[in-house]
Length: 298
Length: 298
Image 1 (cartoon, each protein chain N blue to C red):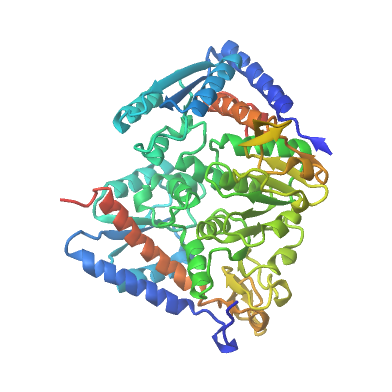
Image 2: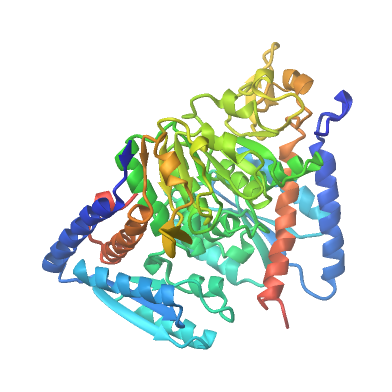
């Protein structure tokens, strides 16, 4: 098994992000002249200041690759049917390459109804059931971004995915399960653990790679991993430090895990930035699929 | 050790279905209908389709058979499916697989109305199942789950291993077991130490299509084994060569260790058709807003 030097054990998400964005911008450059690349539309419903930072990051990434990014805010009093109709008009609009629904949304609207309303070829977040179905069937071009980012970072280690033993901790519908299917599609042997697993450590200690998404700070300690294993930390938790300031940490005890693991993704600076990059990567996958479907001709 | 009697269990299941069909016939004057489309002359497929027709009628439902020539064009097949999608007497549509090579299987399956997709293979159903939403559940994994619930009881926290990652059995089985809060591993052709992983499992579901692939000493004492494989092998008995059906598990050796095991034939096989009938009934109830028979859905 490969083992990097101690100082190289952090997988730098920002570097991976830059590489992906560069690749996307090359695609955009090539295609801008002969096949229109539409805009991405970010939709918030009601007042959601907590997502501003995400939207800003997405906008920045879009600008960097040369894709237009439009921010829409719809009224919180809009009915589910109205919102659905508006989404459908985005589906019909050739100017729109992809749609992002920022969460949270008002309680009277069912998020799943909205996710199903977005056309699969514009579903750059990979949230429509049909998009998830494609992932399960190993057509992984437009996967949910966080799941896709975790796999991208795992590949960054240089480990061979075929036959790699991976333990996925967390079986959420938007991260754990799609990540498991993505890794399975790449030939990994995946075990999914969760809150009902009798001994997570028993499983995680024998894995070549551990991907953790449970939303609990310091959940994964150094005693839970095999020396040299890769650790991908999907968690984003807000905690208070000794001075009473808030800071963001992942699900693993990074400083201790780093001494044992072969690789670990930092939080912040690991999965987060790559997630934004995967959204842009999905945007060009959407463009390719739309071209293939004959949507963008003439 | 118990032999899991899929034949008896499926018989009980079919009776429950029949009772429920009688109720909705009387109460709502609706008869559930299943349309089966068979393309070509594949002898095994012909046997399956014939059995499905007989059992559908025995359950008090309408059976519609559509046989098309081996060289039928994709357009004709898609037109037929479109017609069945619109036919109010048809609540379930099953296109017998495999299709001849010149037909695009994915395209055909995904042209079935997801609400009538009683095989549960449409990508929307796959995605819905994956995100914990109401969907059609593939028949064979559903049958396996019913047997497991019957013989294991509460599955939560059990270690389960699915052998094989096919779209029709392995992956949906993985998903169903995760929904039951099992800790699940999917092993496959690229997996390095299948034996060791199997040995640590409380539940084994074998679906690889290789005769006697799972050996007796891969079985943890007290495990429950579901054998999905149906393999025809030739054996020599008293000097004459005979053909015989065997599963993916070495039954004679495994049964010495297991707490319960399905035989082949007579285990999972009969459950598959019973679940097809259950799905047809459920589809009918959903279409007409009738109460769903609780024990037949997830």
